[in-house]
Amino acid sequence: MIQDIAPHVYDNAFAVRRTPQEGDLLILCREGELLLRKEQAAAPAAWPEEDGTLSFPAVQDIPDVRAFWRECREQDQAEQDAGDEQTEPRGGDRAENGFYRMGGVTLVYLFCIDRVAFYGADGGSRDRIAGALAGEYGWVPSRKLRNAQPNVLAYAGVTALQLARWREEHHFCGKCGEKMRPSETERAYVCPSCGLAVYPKISPAVIVAVIDRRKEEPRILLTKYAGRTYANYALIAGFAEIGETIEDTVHREVMEEVGLHVKNLRFYKSQPWSFSDSLLMGFYCELDGSSQIHLQAEELALGEWKTREEMPVRSSDISLTSEMMERFRQGLV
Ligand SMILES: [Zn+2]
Image 1 (cartoon, rainbow, N blue to C red):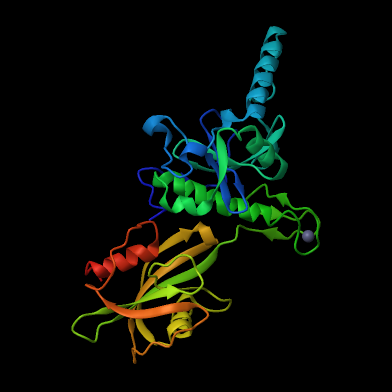
Image 2 (cartoon, rainbow, N blue to C red; image 1 turned 30 degrees about the vertical axis):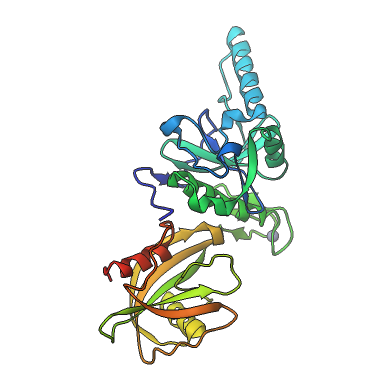
């Protein structure tokens, strides 16, 4: 799945925020698009150690950052020549928590994967960097990440996209309208006027594989969603509503979408699905009662029972849905 990046290690601990260094990467996001190296926009990206080429720009590719570092070095040299002790750490002013002002641009720390730190940039800084890199880098729709390799960069990209969306939606307090500030103690925005704290948006949702075991050949319920370009088979899926347990969500979504009762819920795995700000929780469960499907027409275009032999072989392996379907096809559930 997209988050399975081992042996690489994702570290999003809030305490780990460091000054941008050479070799760190920049993931710029704009309205569902990411800035990627142009010749790689449709082709695989590359992790640094594999062949030295990067799909995302590195921090040192930004002219403002190079100029800033040069100034820092010159300043350090001048201080050294004058015999002064160096007072400021070189490499970036910490403008605000996790935000680094470097010359004409401000970078925001996102997370680390292994020893590489990832940064974003918003608004004017983002546009200024994208403009400076326009010859080599271009805006690419985030859906490209679904097929991008290596998985570790696709995962970094979509995670950065969710964080960027969250930052963009919280410039101002939703309660009193004041400009929000990044928290000093956690990944949050805090209103300096009324104290409202806003955390990254993560919506819990379920993926449900309904299995009917009452026939000789067990069957699984596959669906196709209405009005979507994604035309592959899917499973029942939906967001948790306020006031319900995640098990309630499973029962309600299955009833709403196909009009069936289920029992024997078994949690399988979860998956961060940053494309839609969600945390997916996968459940296998068994049909309880009639297998007669009543489709919710606004949601689903199709709902069908399939035996293992009738299942399509999945081409993608990044999603929890695919993995759950494939496990059924292989007779593992
Ligand atoms: Zn406020």
